[in-house]
Image 1 (cartoon, rainbow, N blue to C red):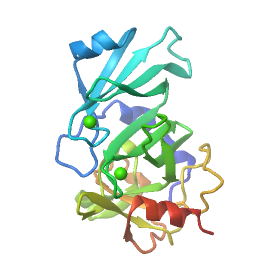
Image 2 (image 1 turned 90 degrees about the horizontal axis):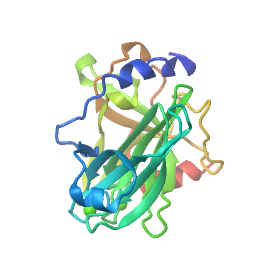
Image 3 (image 1 turned 120 degrees about the horizontal axis):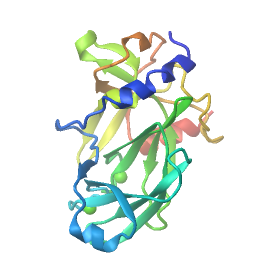
Length: 244
Ligand SMILES: [Ca+2]
Ligand SMILES: [Ca+2]
């Protein structure tokens, strides 16, 4: 077993080699595009990056626009992240943090049509892995639960590794009509990376969530007991995570 702190060491090196996955996957990563003229007309300021994905689940592409402010390059906050739907309405306005790891994937994990967000966010001293339910009423997403990511690498005899965000290709799921259940485990003893990550007090259990991918960190093998894998909706996982 590797120690908690050693899990963060490869962060900087690996971020340099991140590429966008192009294969068909259950979880979808936003794609970077040139700034569309309609975005330039709507958003004032120094647009640094535009990504597109159907984040609200209506079948039309939406936009996540990053705008740099005048803060120095080593500031905690680089600028703003503006979420714009296909009708050019701003539906979320968030801070763009100067984080070492800031990954988001979209996948519908419950009965409504809106995708949930699987996120990996943090720094060299701790990455929080979370599932959020989106809230377009007030633009504040709701944390459903945090989790420990375990990557099953089929190129390495299906051995288990810590799921560094840049190595995750897809989440292991079970399709249920128009949404997915996640493969998860609660009766495991995999230690998490929450040393410098705030876990909400109401979350009493941290599930393991399983992913496909190819590890760039073969020394990060997880040999703790993974428990019994079950297929559960995000809501069911969130409810179980609250129980003692
Ligand atoms: Ca949309
Ligand atoms: Ca949903």
